Length: 207
Image 1 (cartoon, rainbow, N blue to C red):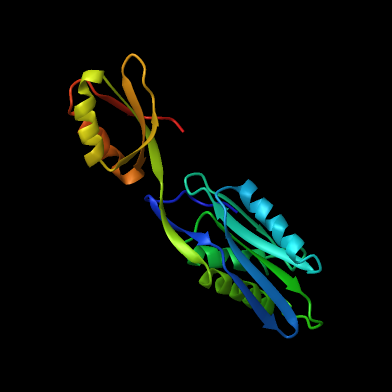
Image 2: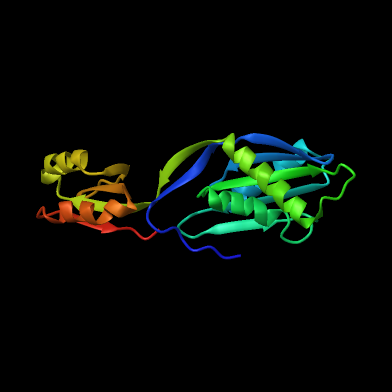
């Protein structure tokens, strides 16, 4: 499955994961939502869930991270194809969430639910866990490098105070320099502000 990069620079993500339990004809679906900024982090959290429910027959999951260069994965873990991981992913996608994952651990109750029943159960459990999670706004940012002569320090600090930029690092040498973190939609405006001042050089850093 492929995913297009995020358009714009604003998205939502889980700040603190929620839990939910869904029961259907004897089967129990334990769902856990969690924040994850990378595939590696998601896989580590998935392992924790497997250890929490060692006797579950299935640990099905989906996660979507890194909106600039999307990393996503779905896993049915032995359930019929597209009956578990895909419904969980659709719950994430419908909520518009990135840097987030959900795992649903199923204990079989003795009655087969059929593919349609599984789809409803896994998606319902994922949606319930997300409903119990606390969410936060997040923004895609770019790193910029600003350099200028030391005699322009007062001017630069005044502009930095007014600009929608956060100082990420200080890099002093023969001249003064800062690494700035700027929301993607405001990069052009910040560059324009500093380029208007003679002696100031600003550029986007490759990341």
